[in-house]
Length: 61
Image 1 (tube, rainbow, N blue to C red):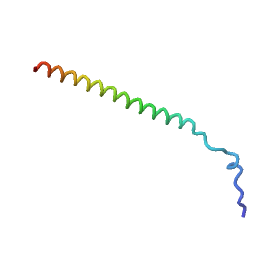
Image 2 (image 1 turned 45 degrees about the vertical axis):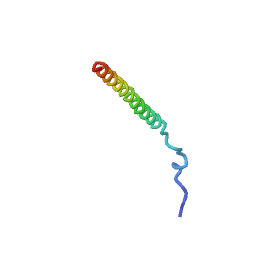
Image 3 (image 1 turned 60 degrees about the vertical axis):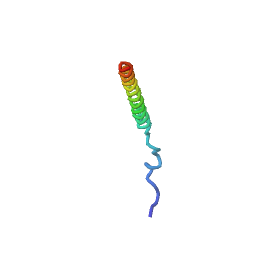
Image 4 (image 1 turned 135 degrees about the vertical axis):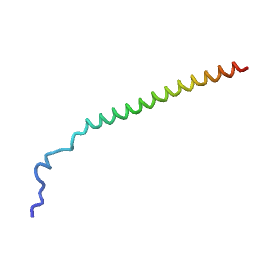
């Protein structure tokens, strides 16, 4: 029995997955940025709602 590995396996190194790493970072960054933007927009909406409530309260008094 011959248990030697084919020469092709000995010559090849690990696959180059750098592009997948960069793509992963881009996707994670985009999702994170989108989340922060939604938080900012929600905060603006809440501030607007609070201003309206304060104006309604002051007009009732």
